[in-house]
Amino acid sequence: MNTHQTDRTALQKKIRKLIDDRSGIILAHNYQPPEIQDVADLCGDSLELSIKASRTEAEVIVFCGVHFMAETAAILCPNKKVLLPVPDAGCPMADMITGQALRDLRKTIADTAVISYVNTTAEVKAESDLCCTSANAIQVAGSVAPGTGIFMTPDRNLAQYTRKHCDREIRYWNGYCPVHDALTPGQVRKVRKEHPEALFLAHPECPPEVLELADKVRSTSGMLAEVSGSDHEEFIIGTETGLLYPMAKANPDKVLIPADPGMVCGEMKKIRLEDVVRALETLQPEVNVPEEIRVKAKRAVDRMLDIPR
Image 1 (cartoon, rainbow, N blue to C red):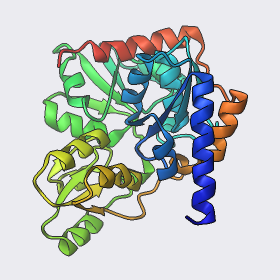
Image 2: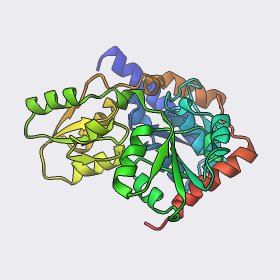
Image 3: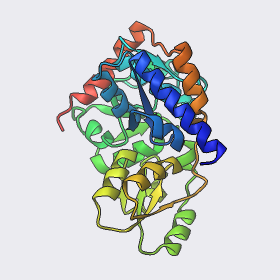
Image 4: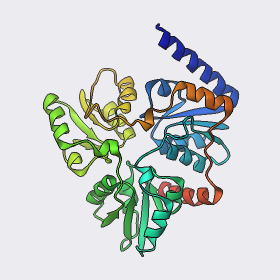
C-alpha cells in the first residue's frame, strides 16, 4: 500500500468513527470521487438519497454532492442537521434560474403547471407546482390535467425529451447541464464505430440529437439497473464519468466505455476526504432552508411522490 492509499484509508477510518460519534450518515452522489463513494453509507441519485436519509434515525447528514442536493435533504429532513463539506460546490444548471425569475414568469403563463427538475434550488422548487426527476419526468407531465399548460424548468433537454414522449405541449426554460449538453452526435458516432457491439445509454440531459442515437435513455440509477440487468457485455455510458465507478464495481465482467472522457463535472469533484472530516468535526458548513420556503418546496416534491406509479 503506497503513502496515498495509507493516508486515504486512515481518513476513511477517521470518518467512520466520527459518523458513529455523531449519529450521522454520509450520502454520496454517483458522480462523486471514488474515495468519497467508498466511505459513504448510501450512494445514488440526489432525490433518492434524501428520501432514504429521511427514513433513518441519523441526526446528522453529510451530503457529498452539490448545493441543491443538500438543500433537498434539508427540505425532506427538517429535524436533521445537513452538512455540505464544500459549501461552494454548485450546479451550473440549477443556477440558470432563480426564484424571482420564476415568479416573474408565472405572471405571464396563466393556466399552466410549472414542473421543476429536482436539480433546482429550494427557492425554485417553492415556486413550482410539481417537481420531477430525470426518471419520472414523462410520468409527472402526464399527470397534469388535460387542458392545463405545462412549463418545465430549468433543463431544455429534459423538457424536449419529455414532450416527445408524453404527447403534451410543453414550454421550457432555456437551461442545460454543461456536461451533458456538450456531448455531440459526432462524438457518439465515433465511439460507436470503435465499439460496434456496445449499447449506448444516454442521460435525458443530453441534447435531442444525441438521444436520437441512444439505445436506451436512462437516469443514472436507471443506467446502473440497465447494465446490471442486461445480458449485453458492452455499454457506452452517456453521462458524467463518475458513474462508471459504481457501475464497474457492480458489474466487473462488463465493458464500460465513456461516451466522452471529457464528461467531468468539476463541481462534483470538489469534496475530498479531508473536507468530510472537517465537516464532521465542526458540524459545519450547515445548509438551512427557511421554513416558509421549505414547506412550499416540500409540497412540490410531495405532489410528485403522490403520483401513482
